[in-house]
Image (cartoon, rainbow, N blue to C red):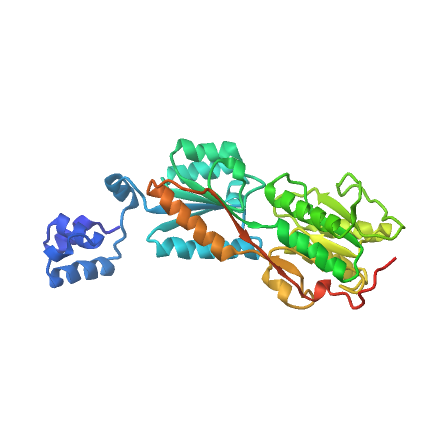
Length: 362
C-alpha cells in the first residue's frame, strides 16, 4: 500500500506537506500546483489513509458501527440504507455487523466493534435479543450507543414507532367491515415491540365493546370461538426462532384443520401475513372474502397482487435521522434533554381487509 512517505519521496516534498494536503489542513500554505500534484499522485498510486495510524494520531477512528440481526424485511433494509447515507453525509465511515455472521452471538459482535474502536453504535431493531448485559459491554468501552426500536430499560437513548395506536385503529377498521372474530398472531418475546402490538389489539377490542377470550395465548392451544353474538379477540403468541416466519403458515393450517379460523388475522409483521396468505390460498380460501389478513411494516410486496395488504407504515426515515442526530451529540459529549423518542405510525388500508359485505357473521 502506498504511504504518505512514498508520495513525499516521489514528489520531493516534505512528509508534513503531503499529510496536510491529504487531510485538507493548512491548505493556504501551499500553492495550487503543489496541492494538485499531491492529490493526483495519491489518486494515481491508489493511496488510502491508514486507519490505525490515524486513530493513534487523532484518538478517533471516524467510524460508526451498526449492529443488527439480518436484513430479512424491507424495514431493516431501508434502515440500513438510510443510516449508511446519513452517516456518510455527516463525514463518518460505517461498519455494519450482522449477528448471523457470528452465529447470533451478540458478545462476539460487540467485541468486534470495540476492537474496531468505533466512535458510536446504532443498535438496529433488536429489541428481542439485546439487553442490559450487552449495553454494558459498550458502556465499559465508553462507546455511546443509540437504538432504533430498542427497549427504554437498556439505559441508552431509544427511538421507535408507536405500534399501539395503529393496532387499535386496525381493530376498529376491521370491526367497521363487519368482522367479529379477530385473532392477533405475534411472537412469544416479552419485548416492547410485541407488548405494544398486543396492547393496541386489546384496547381496540375493548373500546368497540368486545371481549378478549381467556386462553393461554400459546399456539399449542387450539380453542373454538364462542357461539354467541358479539365481538371477540384472541391473542396467540407463536414460538419461533429469530427471523423465522414458517410457524405462522403451519399454525394457520392447524386452525383450518380444526375448523377454528377467525374472520381476520392481525399479523405482527408483513412476513407473517404473507405466510398466512399462503396457507389460506393453498387451502382454497379467499382473502378477504373468507378471511381478512393484515400485517405490520409496509413491506414492498404488500402493494402488489395477490396481497394488496392492509398494514402499518413505520416512520423509518424520521427514526434514522433522529438516531444519528442523537448519536453525534453523544459522540461530541453533549448532554441530552430527552432520551426516548416515539414517532407516529400510519395505518395503510388495502384490499386484504375490505370485506365485500359489511354485515356481521354469526
